[in-house]
Length: 481
Image 1 (tube, one colour):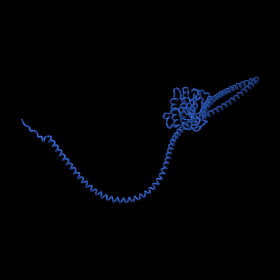
Image 2 (cartoon, helix red, strand yellow):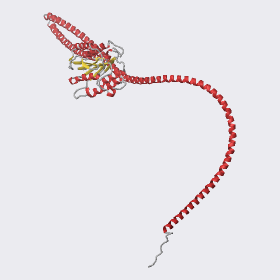
Image 3 (spheres, one colour):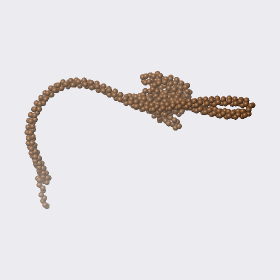
Image 4 (tube, helix red, strand yellow):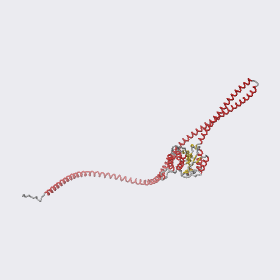
């Protein structure tokens, strides 16, 4: 058996590995320290170089500092002198500043007062500018209405002038025909006189013929010839008289026709109320009895205004030549029938009806708002019963009734009366066009005429004019009684 030697226990393989690792670490540390020493040497050399440069710079700085100290000492002396002068000036300035501050305080007070006045003036200017803009807009609308009314007035004046000219021409023709008739009458009288003379001559001739018949046959024959000639003349004269009578009859017929034409022109001229052509068979008269109908404005009473309105309603009734039946609606905050007949037609009986309506209106006391919506709603309930014309008597824009949204009703501050009336008026006109007075098959639209009383605002005239125009009617404004 072979004997194997055992590995020495003092130095083993793992101890060798540890020794090698330790040797590597020592080597590595030596290399690192060598590198750090080289870096520190380079840094030290660089620091020495920098130190030398800094020393050079320090010497230059010290030299510059000495120069700067000398210069600064000189400047300090100058500044000290200037400071003394400035302090003197400062004291003087402080004294002036005190005076100036007092003046500035006074000026500030004056400036504050001026600013307050300026703000008030600016607010007033803004308000005035708004009023001016509104006034200009109203003036423009009024000018438009005035131009249109002037155009209508010119047209009516032209028609009236033509009617007068036609009437004058007809009168001239009538006078001419009267003269011709008088001449024919005179001619007929002359012919009748001639006939009477011939008849007398004939009677004398017959008498002479009877007296001479016994004495001479020749004389009798000659008398017979004269008699035949005279009878022929009588026949011709009778024919001329018949022709003259026929001409007289024709002239009388022509005179009657001309007189009818004159009467027609006169009736057409009379059947107008302040420029409105008066028409209608079945008519509703809408009469505003709101509080403004017996006032000129909110502060000024007009005790004669309401009687004038009542008389005007009666006058229009009398002027309508074709009026057969009627109804009267009075309205303010609400609307009702004047006669209380439940919406049935009243037969028109001339002056009796007009006087009765006037008397009933005079018993009414004007008060309340202007609810035009309720008035037209009640009036147009008669459309299915033949309503063809409405006459509206009012002095203002609508002030109550439907047409405002809840936001517009509850806005703060409330809407101005003119703005409120504009919104309600537009709503009313739209409803007339779309519902109450819309075009129906086989039925004409209802004509609406408007008579405005004592209105001062162009908005009222513009509203009533637009209402009448859109419903085939006419408008007239009575600014004074």
